[in-house]
Length: 582
Image (cartoon, rainbow, N blue to C red; front, side, top):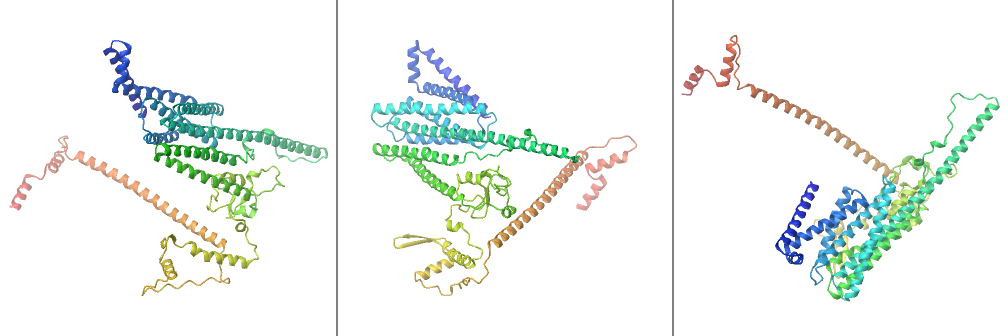
C-alpha cells in the first residue's frame, strides 16, 4: 500500500512539474522570460521544489540501497520517528533567527536531515554487527566501511563550508545553527567509525585466538591418538588379547571450530565506555554549551536547545558514574570466591548465556579459559566471569535479584560460622534500621516540614516527637517486643525455602488455571459446533416447510396433509374457531 501511494505521489509530482514547465515555455517567447516566469510564480516554484525533493529522495534511497542494502522494518520505524523529531526540532530552532527562509536554507536543511539519517543507519548497523555476525561478512563490511567513511567526509565537508561562511559574514545568523549541528554530526560519525574499528579489532583477536586454540587442540588429539596406538602396539607385543570392542581412535577432523572457546578481548568493554564518554557526551556537551551561550548572548534564551543540553549533561554524569562503578566492580570481581561443586549442585545454569557451569579446576583441566570461570556474587548468585564482565558494562547490579555488586568489602565478607554473637547483633541492627528506612519522606522548607508516605503509626510517632497531644479514644498501638539474641531468627536458608514454596504454589495455581482454560475452550468449541448444527437443521426445516409435495396418485393424503399444515387448518376447523370466538 505504501509503495502504491509513493508511486502515485511520484507520478503526480512528475506530471505537475512537466505541465508547469510546458506551460511556461508555451506562454513565454524565449528561455529567459520562461525562467523569470517560473521564478516569480509561487505555484510553479512549489511544483518544481517538490519535484526536486522527489529526485533527491530517489537518489538518496538508491545510494542507501547500494551501501546498506534493504533496511529492516525496525530500522525504518526508528528512522521515521527520529526524522520527524529532528525536523520538528530544527523548525523550532530557526524561529530564533530573524532572517527570511530562502532556497539556500532549504538546501542546508535537506543536507542536515540527510546527514542525520545516514548516521543513524550506520550506527544501527554497527550495533547489529556487535549482536550477531552478518550472513555475508565480506559484502557487509565493504558496504559498512564505505558508508561510514562517506558519512564522516560528508559531515566534515559541510562543517568546513559552514565555518568559512560564518567567518566571512562575521555575524551570527542561521548558518551558526547548521555549523553546530554538523559539528555534532561529525562527532557522532567519528564515534561510530571508532566503534566499528573496535568491533573489527575484537573479531580479529577472537579469530587469532580461535586459530591458535584450534591448532593446540588438534595437537592434543594427535598426541592422544599416538599414545593410544603405542599402548595397543605394546599390548600386542606382550601377547595380550585386544578387546573386540575397541574404541575408535580420535581424529583431528573431529575437532570443530564451533566447539573452541576463547577468552576474547577482555578490555573491549572499558574501551567502549571511554569512547562513549568522550565522544558521545563530553564533546557534544562542549558543543551544546558553546551554542547555548552564543545564542544567549546575541538572540536571547534558546528554548529549543535546553532539552538537548540537559539530556547531554545528564548522560555525561550518568556515564561517568557508570564507568567509575564498572572499574570498581571489575577490581572487586576478582575477589569474589569461585563457585564450588556444592554451590553448582543447586544452580548450575548461567542466567546470561544459559549454559551449564562447571567447577573451576585449572589443575585437572589446564585448557579451561578464565571466561567460563563460575563466580559467586555477594548475593549468592553464580555467573560466568565473562558474562559478568559483559553485564557490568551496562549495569552494576545482579541480573537476578538486582542487588548491587559493588558493595563495601565489609558487607561482602560473610562472618565466620562460629561467630553467632556477631550474626545476631548484625540482624538486630538490620531489624532496628528497617523501620527507619521504611519511614515517611520528609522535606524541610524552612520552618515548614512536609511528610509523604507515612502510615498511621508513623504519623503518631512524628506527633509524639513534636509534642502534639494524642486524640482521645485512639491510644497508640502497643509496640512489638524487641527481639533478643536468644530468640530464633529466620535464616537465609529458611527464607530461600519459603520463597521456593511460594514459587511452587504459584506454578501449581497457574497450571490449574491453564487446565480450566483448556476445558473451557473445549466446551466452547463443542457449543459452537452444536450451534452450527442447529442452524443447519433450522435452514433445512425452513427450506422444506413452504414447498408442496407433488407426487404420484398413490399419496393423495400426504400432499393434502402437507398443504393443510402449510396453509392452516381446514375450513371446518376455521368455522369452529370463528364460532368459539363469537
